[in-house]
Length: 109
Image (tube, rainbow, N blue to C red; front, side, top):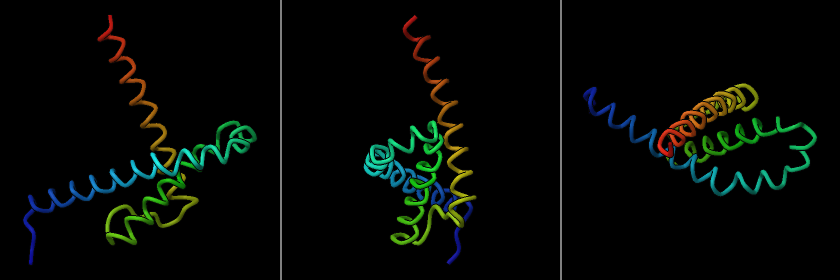
């Protein structure tokens, strides 16, 4: 059985969508609990623990997709892959929040 390039793109989009949904659920359910438990670490590290918590959420998403679907997000090493991915995720999230905040201001003006 072989796939045409168009089928591969559709399959890839489906995989990305499923991983995004799982990551969203992990962030919505598990992340608030972990953040509340780690309040002393937020204070102690001046907020830098947030990167480690984001990496942990990515790692949990990777574990779920690997053990339930056998495809999707794969994190080889927590301390390098997940931490760098969390840093990139934080930067992209920050930039998107700046763009959406500016767009919201333009609509109200």
